[in-house]
Length: 363
Image (cartoon, rainbow, N blue to C red; front, top):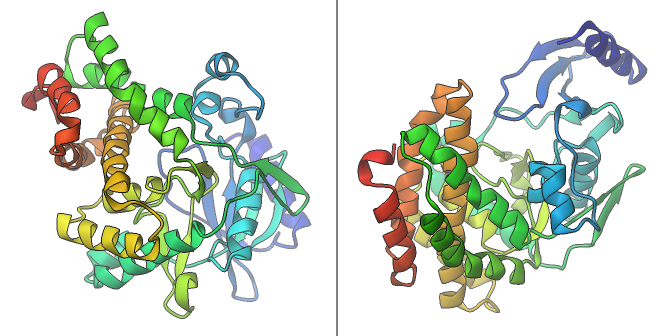
């Protein structure tokens, strides 16, 4: 980290009354954000978030055309927030206003990419379950949060703390750009020849209706990265507030299946088919206006899209960039993808994978 950035962070903390806090570096993920835990002289704990603005490509202007978005880069095309502190602050306020446990924001500088947040603790779902916690009640609470999130139509713009952020739609282009990263990155990782024109054209034809359905169903507030590594268990709170929410700055208006498929087909931990079915039943019982069979068909198709995105954009790309730890997640993601492809309606898509990505190239 540059000395200039470190000086800026120290000055920000001093202005926030936290210049004397002890700083403890926390582990990160594949993003460009960094986190520290602040230990104040009074004994309290806070989280310090650092997202250097210049590190990421530009975000999507609300009125940008598809061509303009593609020209601006992946973040704009896929409608990612690029770690924006404005997105984090406004989304956190929206979630808290609806009785959900997003961290309070105690200080922030949107232009410099800095924020001081409430520390919700270390009780990550993934950690607690690995230590023997019963996963059933945790997943039930996480599904109930989804029901609460989807109770009302979200606003077009989120506003809080002097910041504003557009809540854009997870549209056809965003879905396409994300899913198509499989075509780019998986052959490089698996040692396959690049997919030819015929295979790519068939891929486009198979996916086009799925992406259209995804946009047509985009009607609810969506966390977008809703899984056991981004959820905290807060048993001292009540109801849906028992689930602490992290890493939600990429929120969009999207299909009601989107967060559920992240939760129930988690690339970083095994979720059994039995648990997945039980949680889908719980969700659909709470949302009787949804047509069950139609919803599940779109859930499975979008889940294949998401698995392809993760295998390409996240796991294969990160592995090729020198992060081999992502290899461990690939077999699980392939199992989820193959499970979804058992749906007879997805038989043509299954045939595409069987022809172009043989079993030996799925790891």
